[in-house]
Image (tube, one colour):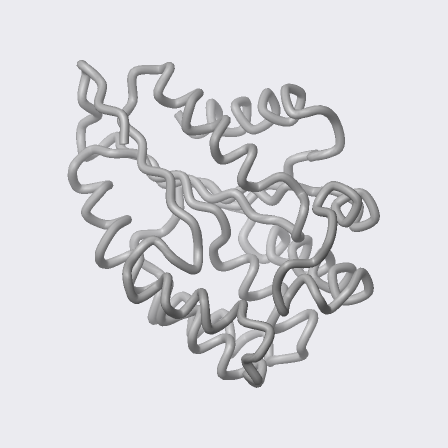
Amino acid sequence: MKQSSEPTSPSSARFFVLDGVDGCGKSTQARRLVAHLEGLGRRVEHLREPGGTTEGELLRELLLDRDSDLSPGVEALLFCAARRQLLEKRIGPCLEAGVDVVCERFHPSTFAYQVFAWGLPEDELLKMLHTWAGSPEPHLTMILELPVSLAVERRGAATDRFEDRGAEFQERVALGMKRYVELCPRTTVGVDADGDEDQVAARVAQAVQNVF
């Protein structure tokens, strides 16, 4: 984590999420956003989800392991547990210390995968996430919107049990992401991810500037 000479005050620290289908460019744009914020003299922590804590990384291995045989309900519970740990151990303390947070994936992924792709009840899943992993809440969640065909091309060969599920599964995930934007318009926006890295980074930076 890069330290700046002008520390961000706790009250002005911001929590940003980048989400979207596999291959939409989350990791690349998260790195670009971190660099952009640091260029503004802000302190920033870059996290991924699930993960970011010892326990979260262990759960990540289990969730992504091709040999894991987990039901949709078990997946949802494990994602929520990993997220709660990340919020308590990393994100909350960062914000309290005046450090911005940029996180890859958050509630939209769990909603899209478990509700739209697997068919769990929408209301129950959202209630669980907001009750058990709802604080601190992101100041802005950006869904990188990219046609699944392009995302698959960018991503390349599948590397885990979620990517193994194919393009049809990812199409349902994309619909779930759009539904999440509809349900949470106050803190969630769609960002066009079709374009080169610089073009998309400029769109992300503009969305972030609107928060400041």
